Length: 203
Image (cartoon, rainbow, N blue to C red; front, top):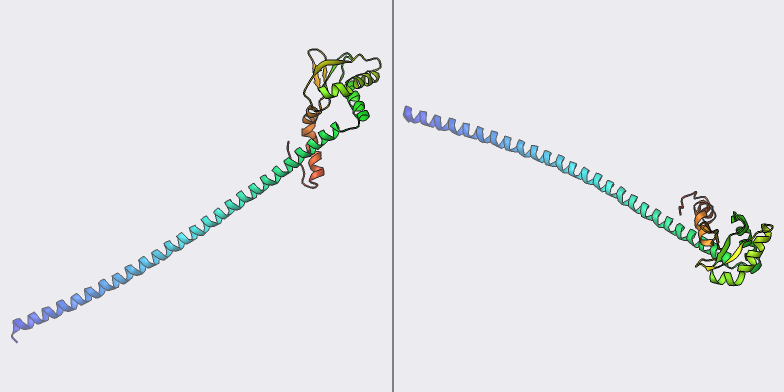
């Protein structure tokens, strides 16, 4: 082997060694890059998983809150219905009073509502016929010489009467009276129906 051949062999050997060294470095870099990306992917997957857990917990809280709200609405609606029934029952009980008690109650209401002693009492058609005159007479006795009169007019009311003094009327119909007192009475009625719940129920 002459000198030129030796040089060529040596150059080839050096080139081969350099190529192997470069290839080894490239493999090391490739491994490092893969490890870095694997670590980054693991961190991102963990972050996504953590975010998913937080979103799931938040959604669970939202659903639980919505369910609690719906349950509360249902309970309040049921209480409202029961209070409505209680007031309806009160109206029916007033209408079903014995005639003597009914007349006495209406006469007392008329005497209390009268401001001149000369107003007219307007009843429903049935009450005008059955108790109208008796109520007027009893109310006038309570007023000691009152001059209340029985109106020819009738109104569609569920018990009670309307006291008419010309331009001024006082609605003493049972429905109107219960409606006017409902805000104050509802708390007491709810307290009887639902002891210990406080004044949750509103009319």
